[in-house]
Length: 244
Figure 1 (cartoon, helix red, strand yellow):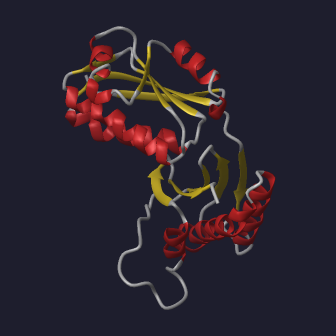
Figure 2: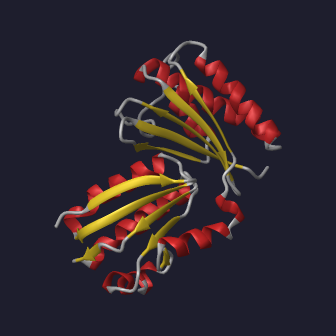
């Protein structure tokens, strides 16, 4: 039976029910679905694995890969909810010791409720793909940095917000959502748009001027950055270290 993946918000958390038989042939689709869930930027992603049957233990590495991405961005926990079963026994093996595994959704909520880092301060705004959008993005980034007592990040965050929004205005031509989130170690700047065309690290020499320099500046300024798919487009994100 093929894997099914159904996700819905429950308050601040996104709960995804994963059912069916997991083998290596299902890994890519499951990984993409989890990335799309991360792109929604919940405070945590809870995976209900009660209906999951693992037919190839190597396929469980997909949860490790998703957890690594979640740690990079959007810096949220992924909690695997697996009642006592063959799947739970595999997840408790040494190879998956770094995964967060609990017995139920209630146990996951209880664990997260005791973690003060699970509440994520955020500032969000919807922007039109017009010329003034980049300036508004810089202003929003400045306001966020000052509100969160990060004056040293005003310049870098403003530059990144400016370039990510400008990229949407110049190329995607869709409505976009700018979101800044504060985490214990990083400030994240993310822009979601309606274009499925993904972007990646700059390749080759930079252009002398004009279009094409934006992501080069993001790459040079951010601690790390990337792009993940969504159900209707993509999110381009960048992280800045909070420490001076």
